[in-house]
Image: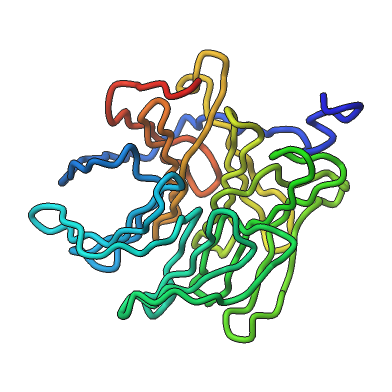
Length: 278
């Protein structure tokens, strides 16, 4: 409870898609791995098969690294990145910790400039679609990191060329809050919006909604692979050209592969579980 407000009133109720009997065979194999001194890699963008930009929100620099036969740092940019997304010309949009601005990193020069401001809101998740739209998860904190009836949590879409807001999503057709903390965003082959949404510091979900702002499905993890108390805290989401959704879950070192409809197809354990702060 938050005062007299229940979680279901704030966020709506979670939906669960059972594993279907007809499974698609998906085999995940590690082709190559690299060891770094980082405590964790939260966000990684690859410009080609030899170059990657790596960040996590604890780092005060964004690093460019060569990932050929071995990993090697070639450039450090002094920014503290919350999220980032590639543009069509391989520059990078950044949401920065503690900033109400969206910044643009020109990768050829290393120059970082303010692109636009969403003040008084703070940008969190950021994604550039194949149609050159910028999709942002934004928030306004009022006394707590998670929403009260006075705070704002929404996803907005901005035209990449003229920087004007195209559409925003905050409540569903039943006036239920759609998001608690829209921390990562991507889109799929159908141009649906996919959001990693944190309900609390320990629990999250993946929400997929259409361009009308209606939930198509919600993935709260799966009881067979969640923590014992059924908590699920995904770190990142990506989609494939085949329509699959790939969700990384750092607490149990697992990768969840979902169908386009949100059914769990496979779950790959990448290492022995390491519990951090839970």
